[in-house]
Image (cartoon, rainbow, N blue to C red; front, side):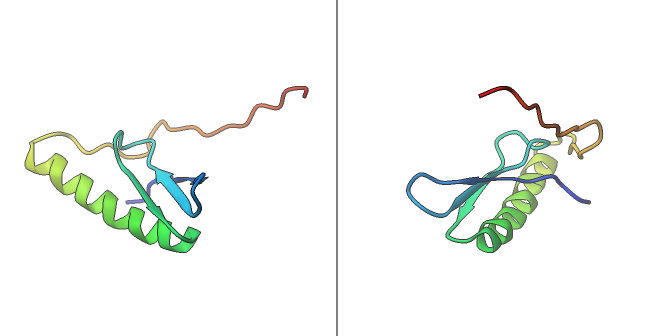
Length: 72
């Protein structure tokens, strides 16, 4: 299963990530690669916790990512 991951630059250095399809699933790392590797682990743990609680695991179905350009 694939998940969309948003990668943000952290103010204190490094990067932090969020998984829009899994509310509350976040991670971080010093490099983008480390942040994504840590996010993979976070997704796996998040899904495991959802299943243990008997909750449905959402995928990216219906998730749209777009960009809107505005005048400066």
